[in-house]
Length: 141
Image (cartoon, rainbow, N blue to C red):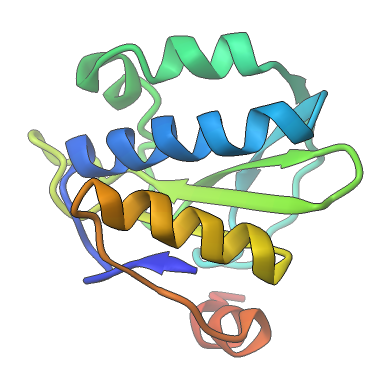
């Protein structure tokens, strides 16, 4: 599942991340974060322990989220649970204000449909499709 259209403003990504965090948190305990270079050049970095509380801090305001811009094109943040039941990726462009941001979520069909429904309730459009085709198209390596 990804936001539609593909590029949106940072505030929309932050709203979507808050809603998805609320949806995913109750059924997923510990989480990790990763600098995801898949779309940039395919470089792989190990995930680091993260917490829902730390994520809440990132999402406290548009400014708080913008402070985590990567400084490189197409380098995403990826949040996932320890059992890899979901992968939540988001890209924050480096412009001020950030207007070319992206978000995608991989997981079980039931998770994706619940997420799409919740986002639609807030007026945020999504598209659901096969993950492999989506990632093959975006691979930068």
